Length: 115
Image 1 (cartoon, rainbow, N blue to C red):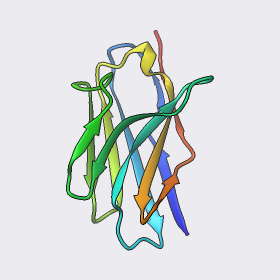
Image 2: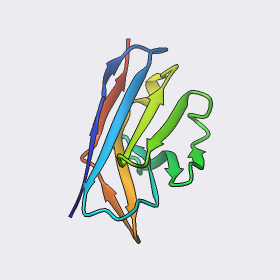
Image 3: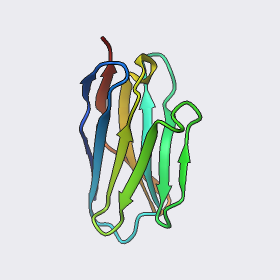
Image 4: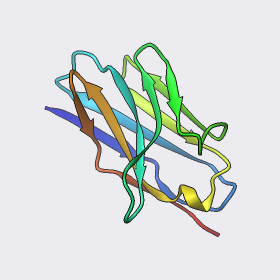
């Protein structure tokens, strides 16, 4: 059993910042990668950022230069620092942990960017 839990969403004004946290727990030998997707109603879930166990990162073009992903492998935790937020960043953000050959997902946390 693996559990993935996110926290840190909320309401923020355009130009503001938020920090999302995610923790994986349970029967984990090693995590290949962790990251964040986001989804808005009527649209497919899209990759926001990911980070491998070796620290390699990948970002969606729309968030490059504004978002930063970081990870503590010893604690099975990942963070997403979001700066210069825009209304189009509004979405439910889902954390995932890629373990073995399977993705484990959190329940999602709402991020709303609005004045």
